[in-house]
Image (cartoon, rainbow, N blue to C red; front, side, top):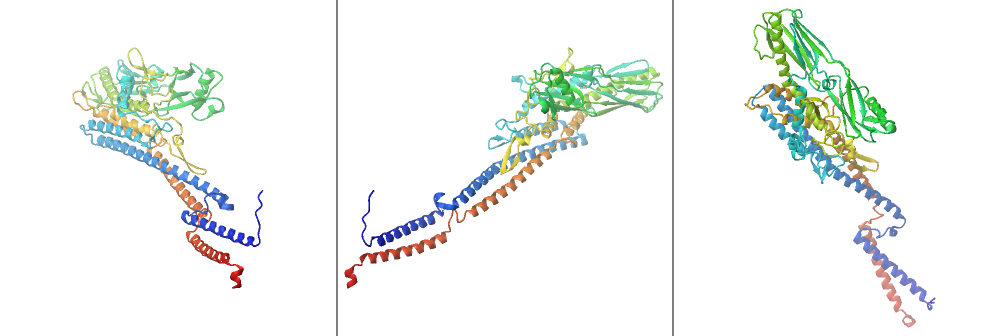
Length: 601
């Protein structure tokens, strides 16, 4: 320990030195504040205000994070909305072109319409493959994967990989619907004065292919009797080859009341989760699980089932009765008498065939039949005209129905195991007997992105402390699938024969189906609804951005006088301290020169 020497009068000089050093330090501190604008360089230098500063800076940092996230998300939402707007424009363009041509019946324009549809399909694919900062916005969580394959792969498949496209599926569906006789899978027989029609004897064929006999009527029942006995529903038993694992998916196509079909995808779940919507419970045995699957369908009429193998779902059709129609020529009709047969198709549409009695009629007529010399001769003429009418209807309306159904089926295809597009099983003659129960690996899967059940939730933005905005999208959403199906159904067709003749009747029928696909029904999702979701997301983010900016500004204001200083105030203090320091230096200098000799003088 060192003891500093003490002499009389040193205390006063020590105090003066300490005061000068203190003022010098204050001067240096004020000068630094003036140059940096900060109160101190460390939180410790803020004293008791450091808690306020730390808290405010943390909150400001959080607001900066929200603003950065919102800024990035705003770009993504704008690009997604722009793609949806373009998709809507392509849909409207295709639909207006279809309805306009059907109205004018211009035979020169079908080929142009097909080309327009092909161009619109290509543009739609480009819109759905939109990227924002390297992220594919329509892929859900699979942001590094382009969601949609090329338009050529959609239409023609990928032959080098053995994968079929939409055109192949349409051709298969048409063949299965037309049947060996080309009349919609109906069997026609003629007796002396009676004509009989019957649906296919196979229950599985009846619920999936061809015409359904719905009703018959006559304008002169005394001469022409007409009657339909509607078919009855078959019994369907479900089974599994193996017990489904947790998360296994099964595709079930059900028959609706109007004759159309609807596709349901259900997931096997254990415990109470199996009772949720879109799921079925895994039982103690595979038989119990099959019963649970049927129970989950709520009594709906099953048309087909499909899954991966395992679990290998299967449906066995039995019982049920085929519908029949009978036309009887009791006596020769008079000119103008009519008979009408109403036929149903598996897209929910109907076709009515009306045949009119005439004095003479061409052998190939599909609208009139000749009155013969006897009822027996008239019966033969009516049978021939009925066969012509059924064939014509099958090659126009039913063929168009096949194209629309196949297109919807194709775009329902999913990369999830067991959920590829349905493919048709054929018999030895090459005609469809039903749909394959094991998912095919020989079809192009047009969509490669995420398959989450809630597309919006696949991408979220933290826009506030407890505020998130959902901005995810998937190209496999219902409205987008139907739009692509409608455009592609036209793009895949050809309405000009080898001789250059335009099949206007089939063109009009396909155009009608395609236009229906491009128009959302009351219970169907629309492109406008998806666009509204993103409009609301943009509005929510704009509101959150405003709140974040206001909060940040308020917090920054609260730091005035804590972290930062007023340059005017510091300058005034600095000037005052400089004056004091100069005065202190002067006084100290004078005092240091004083001595007893100077005083005695």
